[in-house]
Image (cartoon, rainbow, N blue to C red; front, side, top):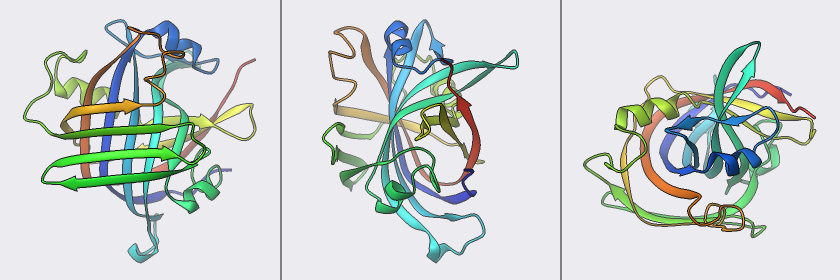
Length: 242
């Protein structure tokens, strides 16, 4: 089922990004995808996004909803009609919105798990924690705006990191049909990011040494987006290969 075009405001979006062993990431991807590499490393991360006034495109503002959301993701490539395509594979979505959870796969793409979010913003700093109700996912960090992009990032410059993630606007998530992934595309006309400094970080998934052995994954950098108008567009499902 194709979702309607939804529009709203990205009040706050933090992209926490890791560089990882491509062999391990490959083992976590559905057939047909491969990691999109940067300097020989796969790129993984968590998108933590507060959405406001989300509604069907032509609905009034007072019909919109707000929510806190988290998406664990991997930058991927695949071949389509002899053309290399790119986007993100999102194995897990979490939300504090009952509507998002109930409407996942119908109004919103992919299954959304219920989670409790605790976010405190003060004078440019953010303290964030998220715990899923099923106990399978948790994220916590503390951070603030920073003056420059980190020099030890796998990306040489902020503009190169920005361009990389802007190209990952097409996302695919597991669906109830099991033979395909649900697609959704994020459209942002005024793409803007700034560096964000992470002072402390915990991820139940990326810190799991049974999935990512010691030395196989490393926090790279974080980016912040604020007060940006956007739209969500349905995309064709990705057929899984046997």
